[in-house]
Each structure stands twice: as C-alpha cells, then as structure tokens.
Length: 389
Image (cartoon, rainbow, N blue to C red; front, side, top):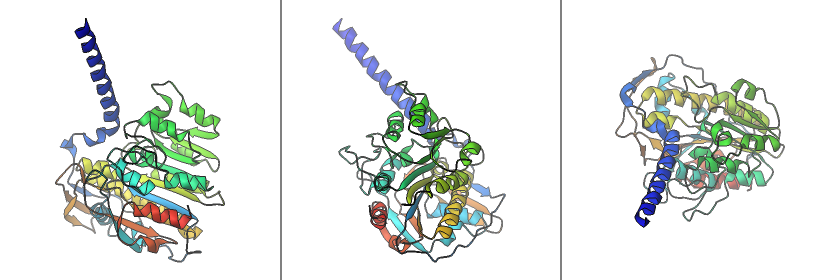
C-alpha cells in the first residue's frame, strides 16, 4: 500500500513536470521548427526608401526614451538587412554607436530572460530569470521607475507580450516559463500601452481568472484587431494581437511599425514624458532556424519600425532612441551577397545564441553616452540617469 502511494505521488510529479514542459514548449517551439525549408540565400523583393533625419535636438537630456531591442540581432544581422535593402537602413541615422557585452550571471552565453533583465534593471542575473536577481528577489525596472515618476509607459512586441524580453520590463518571476504569472503581473502596474501576443495567458488561464475583464475594470481598452488598435488615440490600451506569438513578418496581422506609431502617439500625451520598450522578437527566431530569409525579413521590419521612431523623435526633439540586442543568435556569417540585387547568402555554426558583443545605436539628446564597449547593464543605468530616475 505504501509502495503504491509512493508510485502515485511519483506519477503525479512526472505528470506535472510534463505539463510544465509542454506549456513552455508551446511558447518556445520556434526553436525546434524543422530546418528542411530553411534558406541560406535570400533576395529581397521590395526595397524601401530610407530617409535622413536631422541631428539637432532641443535639449541635452531627453524627456522621452524609446528603447528598441532586436532580439538576436548582431552586427551581421544588421548588415544582412542593409545589403538586402540596397545598402541603406534607417539605422544609418544613428551616429553614436557602441557595443554591449551580453554575458549573464551564470553563463558566458545569455538567454533572452537574463539579457532582458540586464537591459531593464541594470543588474546581471541567471538565465531564465524575469526581473529578479540571482536570489530571485524582484528588482525594480526602468519602466517601473519611469511609471513611479509620472511618466507614461509602454511595451510593444512581435512575440507574446508575456515572453522573456517584454516580460523582463514589467514582471518579476523566477522562471520565464511562468507565463500566466507574468500576465498577472501586468495588473500590478499602471502601464499605459502594451501591444503584442499572449491573449490566452490573460483570458484562458488555469486559475480561471479573466485578466482581460480585470484590465477593462482598470480602464483599459482591450482589443485584438490591429485595425481597431490603430484607431486608438488616447487612454489605456491593451492590444493582444494573437493567442500566443504573432506570426512571421510575411503573414502576421499585427504590424510592428503601426503598433509603434500608435503607442507613441498615445504616450506623447503625457506632459511628463514617457518610456517605451519595443521589441523585434523574431530576428532571433530566424537565427534559431538558420533561415536567412526569416532573419532578413524580420530585420527589415524592425528597421522600418525604427524609421517610425525616428520620425517621432526628429519632430519632437526631446526623445532619445536606443537600439540594441539582448544577444546574437545563430553565429550568422555573410558568405556572399549583392547590394544592387538585395541578395544575401548566410552560413551558421549553431542554432542557438552566441556570446559575441552586440551593437548599441543611439539617436537624440544624450546619445553621446552610448558609445564604446559597455556592459548590457550600463544601458539602463545611463537611461535612468538621463531621465533622473
């Protein structure tokens, strides 16, 4: 009888572990998609015009900060996008350039959770941690500090909004796989705008809570359709554009450039200023799949989003834009290409993250602080200092 009970407990533990793994896998399956259809050569079918923006600003310190993270974006991914677009990107406007070291507290190679937390809090932590230190104690993020000072705040992502990078700016959990707990953490803040996937973590939960109803009670407009989201001009907005992640750039209904423009217009109504983090999530996913076309398409989508941020910042004159990455993915190398044709040929030694430094681009008042080689933790510290947080 005792042995039988022991076996039942063991079976329950194994089942619980399997369910946890399945939940995590459903959010991480972009890493495991078959590479049979992966392409190592890509030719961009449609180039876009790149505008040049002025380099004169109204003040020495910013009123607003736009933090932009190209997940998995190393210098190779940037140059692949530049080649595919005929030799120019909106990133050409960034005259202040540096490099960030991405190592986590427990690994030479970081994951997105530890990388995101370093960029959101200014502290290194272990791989898998969301907004907590190495002792799993919550660390206040730059977004939360900005909110506490009366600034408007926002998050936009092409992944689920509960995924590692956006989560690290607003949630505090010991594991990046705790998606429903991460979603519940949104209700503990007064974030003004968030747009991304992850609807089911708010509305189809094991605890039966309907966080979308709770968000509405807090005054949020909760919308799922991109066209409806783009119509919102003011107030609090929760745009949940997919059950889990948004689709690949060529198929997704959510538009990162449009979502960014919408969020900036709403946040700009706060006279105290704002802080927003915008993530081009799927550059990383193309790297995991060693798929050049996926990487380049997502890189160009992210760059066009940067273009929307530049349009706003150039007109505003008081906005600092930081563009960087949490890490590089795939160890991507360019082994061939043609700028006139927009053709890129890539090669990869791995389907995972790598340890190389990633670029840091800055535009706007305070941009001169983001040059040279720095730790990833230096970036939020500099932002906090410039905003007086």
